[in-house]
Amino acid sequence: MLSIDGEVVGSTPQDFGPPILRLGFRPFFLAASVFAVIAMAIWMASYVFSVKFAFAGLSPVIWHAHEMIFGYVMAVIAGFLLTAIKNWTGEEVLRGKALALLFILWLIARILPLSGQMIPMIIIAFVDVAFLFLLSVACLRPVLKIKQYKQVGIISKLFLLMFCNITFYLGASGVLEDGIQWGLYSALYMIIALVLVMMRRVVPMFIKNGIDGEASIKNYAWVDIASLVLLLILWVSDVFTEYSEFTAVVAAALSVLHMVRIAGWYTHKIWNKPLVWVLLVAYAFIIMGFAFITASYYLGISPYLSIHAFTVGGIGLLTIGMMSRVSLGHTGRSVFEPPAAVFWIVTLLSLGAVVRILFPLFNMEYYVYWIAISQALWITTFTIFVLVYAPMFFTARIDGRDG
Image (cartoon, helix red, strand yellow):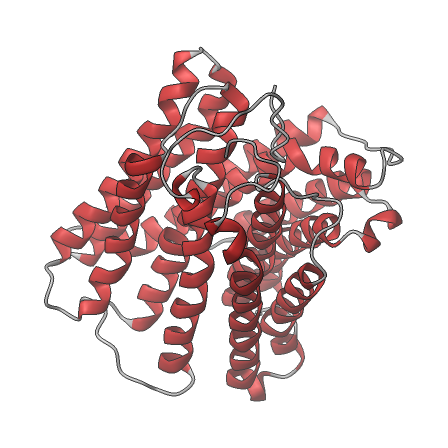
């Protein structure tokens, strides 16, 4: 099995055009980070400074939610899977011109909503859904070719995300009354499920490797099974039924289960390894998201705090941490000696998550300011990432290998 960190033994360079098109992480991680800056700047202009935009008939908050999920997060997922699947299967994935075409489809889907109401919603939907469909097929093909069926569970979530996006567009087009809510929230839960599965697979390995194998990692099968079942129940209860005490109790049980898991992974030795501790901090924010669903019912806190615990804190930190790590490994650099800027990248985004999620708990009077500060920290974080990592994406591996 080939390593997710990019140490591909015996791999030789192949001609797939310029380096940016040689493996999926290159264009998609670059695009995700640039889009993270642009999309958040637009949202900041709209929310904080009341600048008017026409997002193909969508409200600014709906555009923001959709593009963070299906724009930013899907670009990260695309880059990760188109890289990892090559490692997992040893089979060829989209590269060169085929990769460029898939990327262009993603890019067009991001640009079209910014054209105001000039482009019909059905065209925007077609392009966006086509990207997800082709990505899903591209990831599934090598897995089925060598009958590596254990990966099908991960790939199936791409198809489910595609159906979530279809549901969203049915709502946005007025065909399905609750389509926007069902599509966005189902997609969020699907991404949380994908994130938790991937974390369960790779984080223990990253912890052991990052601290020279000195960690004593504990995993429990009953936690693995119970957490997946309860997450499915929470998705149905939270998205498709009226908010109830049952939802709050299920969320509380999930937070306890994941606290048991993270306690089995934790060691104080992670704190001088930013590419390791960022993953556990991200996990802690996901646990916080479950706890805040419960607190929303019993204590009346804003439900948006749980959403942003999942997104800014959990998914945001996980994606920036994984992009930072995978990009180093697959350009021939050491994941154990990252650039000094990586510390600031993960620290600033962690601070932004704290400001967005925890500060409003103590003082709602300055809510808009907390959001503005968090937005500014997000923009700063991803700007630094682009400045540090873009040269790596545009140049060949420093060890002369393929990728």
